[in-house]
Amino acid sequence: MLERPSVESEADRPERLAAAAPGRLHSLRRFLPYLRPSRAALIGATALAVVATLTAIVIPLLIARIIDGPIAHRDFSGAVLPVLAVLTLGLLEALGVWGRRWLVSKPATHFEISMRAKIFRKLQSLAIGRHDAWESGQLLSRAIDDLATLRRFVAFAGPFLVLHFVIIPVGLLVLCALSWQIGLIFGIISIPLVYICTRFVRRYEVASRRSQDQSGDLATTAEESAQGVRVLKAFGRGVFFGGRFTAQSRELQQTEMLKVRLDATLWSAMMSLPQLAIAFALGYGGYAVAHGTMTLGTLVAAITLSTFLQWPIIWTGFLLAELNDSRTAADRYWEIIDTPVDITDPADPVELPAHIAGELTLDGVRFAFPDAKGEVLHDVSLKVRPGETVALVGATGSGKTALLNLIPRLYDVSDGVITIDGIDISAMRVSDLRSLVSVAFEDPVLFSASVRENVALGDPEATDVDVRRALDIAQAADFVDDLPWGLDTRIGEQGLSLSGGQRQRLALARAVLGPVSDNAQSTRHGRQGLGDRTRIMVLDDPLSALDVETEERVQERLRTVLAGATTLLVAHRPSTAALADRVAVLADGRIVAEGSHDQLLKTNSRYRELMGGES
Image (cartoon, rainbow, N blue to C red; front, side, top):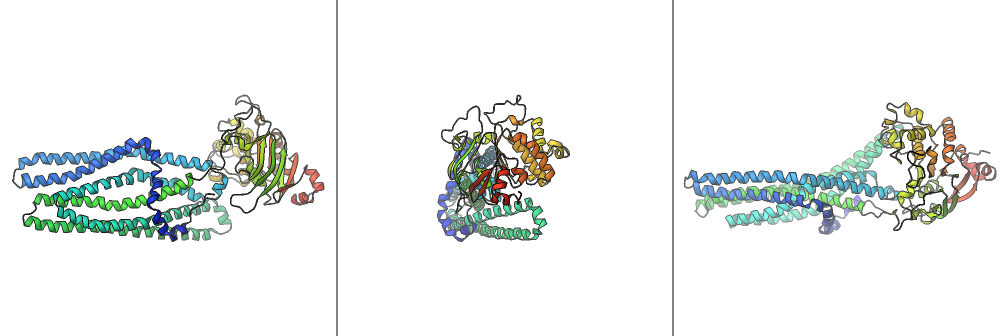
């Protein structure tokens, strides 16, 4: 089970994180293979930045020569070439800065896009149980905010950290060559700077992880509040959720303020200590010039170089903060990528025959949700013959929906086997299996897309004729035609602009249209109707939100579709159960009775109770 890292444990045990900090750069190094195709551009950009900055170090040396040479001897004609050299170096520095940005922009954005695609594919490959254990806001935070942080690191923070590790030592060496005394002053100042940076890194890492986790929690609350706004308003709980959102915002604010205080401490040290060193250097230099042990040009060059070096030192503090944020983002990213995929294609998948009859068999099936204490299903055996419709009936919590989720391998069985035409579904490619199984859930899930796109989700190449046939069977054609742009109408997130019955009918139309099997006998242009598609239909109480009159019309049209498909459906209403050729009663995770709807009404008291006492 993918477990979300506990924010409290990270905050309460900073020493554990600090001890692990050096090794945690491994999460950033893991991105190197993905940057390898762009390594020439990234190395070139870093090299240009180094060259551009080195020119800024050479300029003070030329200035010293100008002051001690032509200016001191009043040979102004001799200053022309050195001045031109300074201008040339300044131009090279500008070109280096421009070239670095130009070279790094495309690789950084490509890296962000490819890593986002990778995490999206990973999330799509994970079993439903993994998603159930992870808050949606946390996933959004990792896929969007964390990857934006990593892009900034690739484009800016990473190269400049490398740059500063080169420039600061080189600059100090040049400074020592100009005046070892001034170099020594900066060397002494660097000792407290190193201590402050080390302490900052250890503490900021903890705060950074806490902040990013809290941002994910905040995103989850915001998303749930937006999607559940009708429920919140209906129950008058908007103020309660507003209070929760505010409380989480305050917690995040406190964490961010801790980061600000840590950052401010670092920046204060980075700003003040180099300035202090410059003040000491200026004092010593003035004394040395006055006593003739240092030339004025050397002093100007040393102070200019010292002033230049203070900015890489200052910016190193910011870059260290970015490094910690990026390292935390990388940790959070790899937590998802490293999650094992439970439902995968077998090593040697079975090739499906050209014709699938559609016989569905469950033999001794057991199932327990991940990390659950007990089983939901116990030794379930059931056979659904080709073209037969079997209704599952049972009380809430009896395991009906769990059983349906096993057919397309949204979950895997804990024990037992499920076969289609005698072929174990775990021996099939997942894509082959799901091209055979068409599903409709009790809670219809619609997307921010057009009606056409939602209905044809399983068959993107379906024609408008196919879509309209499916809508007609689901008794949705009339209300779709009344929408502003018909099939092209975007129905909004989760279809909240539609009624519950309308959403359910669109979901049912999607199941009726279903996915197209690669092994289907019919061709795109040759099939005569939707019933020509060989498939298994799994329907989780697909008519629960419909009124009686609409339900009757849908049932009448649905019978023609179900007659050509192997169907397993959950039923709560007698009218839905009556659609089935056979009914299986599920209780406490076991099938306790089977028979026709009328037969069970006469012989099984549990079934009569579930059907509302109908006799």
